[in-house]
Image (cartoon, rainbow, N blue to C red; front, side, top):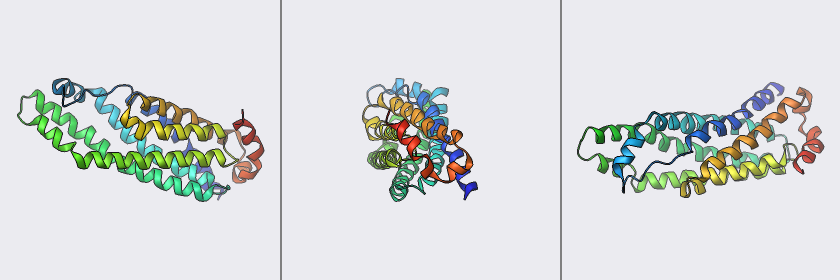
Length: 231
């Protein structure tokens, strides 16, 4: 059991890494393909766009899923174990559903931009077909599940009595700003990623301050963590 928990604390470090790699990927927004397709084509063929989706979106989400798994194991022996498991399940489902959307952006959009630059007819129509009602519905569903799962998980962290309470509330903010709200207002996404970075650091750093015996018995950290979360 101690080996599993040691690995869980290590995986928890992927939460702040997830936030860190997401921040640069969310600092800009692509032009509207319907109103300025030329600028849109220029933007989606940049190296920054490709790396943003490959590293910030796809790799970041994979690391995030692993971090959520680690956090769930950490919370498994606390009073919020069931809540954490339910929250993690919803958050992972949402994250998993986002991966195909990110994959389309990373691989299909640059090809569409290259086709537009080559003067091929129908590039804009192909883009409209790819990002039709089905893709939008899938993205909204994924974002909603991600928001609910991350916010629920953040509340579980805040109520655990083991991890810093403020870290939990930052995870709630991360879920809100990186999920549905971020889809509506893109400027909220880097704020959400920053909340994830700071909140994740609060959780992961706790593991480095504790001995293996303390980590294996979360109840012994309740007083200390609750006190740090109430400041």
